[in-house]
Amino acid sequence: MTAVVSKALAWLVRVGLARTVEAALARIDQRAELLGDRDRIRAETTTELARQAVAEARIMADFNRAKLSFPRFWIFAGLFVGPLALWWSAVIIDSVFGFAWSVADLPTPQMQQWAGDMIRWLFYVGSGVGAIKAFGR
Image 1: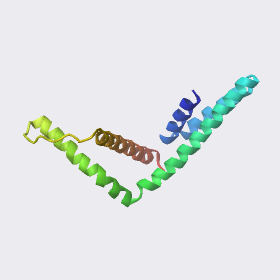
Image 2: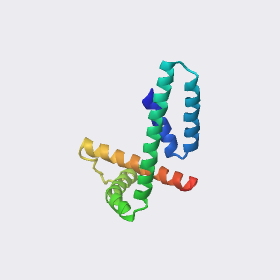
Image 3: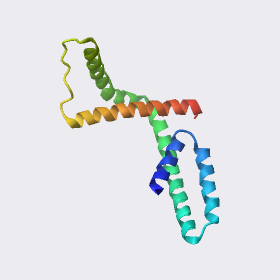
């Protein structure tokens, strides 16, 4: 349960709701003062783990912000995402228009997994960049 709470709070920080997270942690601390020793220790442990997850999320957000502003990063990422985009486009165009291209599938399950990971990463990074721009650095 504690791990789920920590992950949820870290996600909220990543999307720009750090003040809301801090308010929630303060509320948990206030509630812990009213509980018995065992429950108080559990609540304090939960808030401390959550604070550590929030700190880690902030560090990673700073790292990602620096990484995404570095042009060579995008060149390197493009070396992998570009060919995948061409292949994906060929599959879709061939499927929709019924060309006789016979676009080959990716040869191994590992490559299929990597392709899925790259697509998820691309949308995750795009969402992150959009959130950073929307909330202002």
